[in-house]
Image (cartoon, rainbow, N blue to C red; front, top):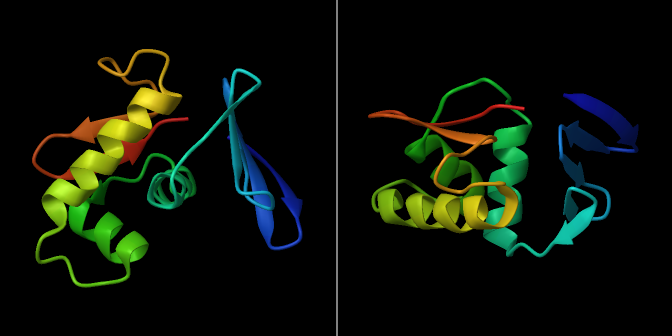
Length: 108
């Protein structure tokens, strides 16, 4: 991962993926990807912690800003939609990996 800082919001670079936090924009292969607020926030949270395994509860509490009583389906749905938008092959993800029984990690 390479970062360039523009004020408080660094731009995150990964092979084939660029996250411009100062603009709230994401590019895959040079093409802009339209993400919902939850998808964008989830991607930034994961990409800002590359290689770290994050539980569904950690993701839910960080993005939804509430306790994680019913987080499982919310996080799974956002990850599913995010993979369809940013992964070259959503069934064999490059960026967002599932860690069975635990959660997800971002591989840049």
